[in-house]
Image (cartoon, rainbow, N blue to C red):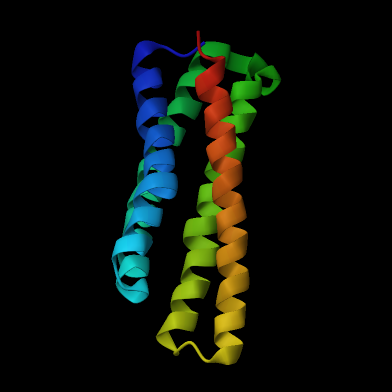
Length: 140
């Protein structure tokens, strides 16, 4: 069970992911030119990644401080760690690779590679969204 401050952190993190990923980004792409929408959405996802890293790290520290040596038996701890690893992969592995492809110009070959990387990033985002939802639902 998370403390009140931890619930606020979880709400900020998971609520932000859901709002940006499933409301704001699709709205941007429906209203703006694709390149502009992609740039704005990318910036918003970057901001959410850093919010997630801060909130998730604080939640892990709180979980460890309460559970002590038995923290490895706490499913919340493992879900938080997986979520943090997913953010790290997305922000510091996939995003730089996609940025490099865009910087060199999206040729037909680059566009295909970019699409694959974007697909992996989207699946990881979906997994994180669902893991975060499981944490929100589990709180009483």
